[in-house]
Length: 394
Image 1 (cartoon, rainbow, N blue to C red):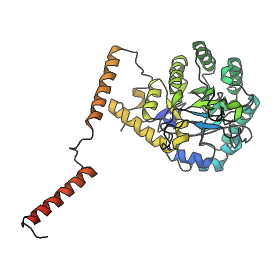
Image 2 (image 1 turned 60 degrees about the horizontal axis):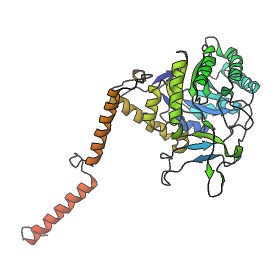
Image 3 (image 1 turned 45 degrees about the vertical axis):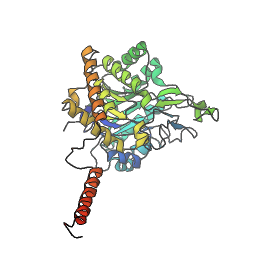
Image 4 (image 1 turned 30 degrees about the vertical axis):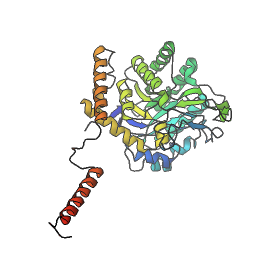
């Protein structure tokens, strides 16, 4: 059986797939369902200094490809303008919440923060430090969200490189991130689209490579807009309808960001791939581009925590079919385009198409329901004929 384990920012994970900080992560009860799944870690909702309700409803939208698709598996895209509804940092640090979230599980519990100001972030980090110092050893790391596009009146910090540099300079100077008991620090990043922006972002992150242990790329693509053509208005109420785009539609942007970040960042900084991951194949592609681990957000939102079991199972089957025993066997091994690769892919598609056109195999060892019913009817017919000819009496 292939080994899905990985080590992210010095944190051992039994599975390289876990949840993104977002929907279904706001309470201890919701987090406990993640802990009971095949997810490798439990990442709490991005917290603010005080609890907040977020933006006005309706603030979410899912593309509905099929009314019968209850899990949203066929959905092309989702949008949200939630505005960081959460219970406040003290809730996610409390013993009661962590007890409920991870229970007897040995899965790492990680905290995410997204303060409205630098002062708020520093204050929350101090609270995390005090909680750990007081003996709460189950907090394995901190993810600093510099990428939220949905807080009204607040810019995306990681698009302002000078501000991003200033924030990281002050955050990484905190004592909690130095010494033998330092907490690993991760940074949630927005999507970038232009070469110089990738370069600049990586340059800032590399300045703090001694403290920043991973980056999670990407958050939602900001300022998407969905219109209700019947009502002639946006489907989302907050921010004039402008919202963060997520789901399958963003996977291709996410893959490019993972690949570029892996190419540009210092080797000591891990990359977590997030954005549009719905299948084991999606996770495989993220790892192939250089991701050490993969987060799942929208699929977890629509399908629930059972998605982690399915994605891990599918990833394991892909690895098995390719002869990979561990994540390390293919992580960051994306090949250059080649004619040989095209031919290999074309041949695989032809083979798959041929297998589909053949239909079900009637020579399987275990008969189908149709085969069983046919045999039963044939036996009854034989008995009736025999009785008619006087060979048996019934």
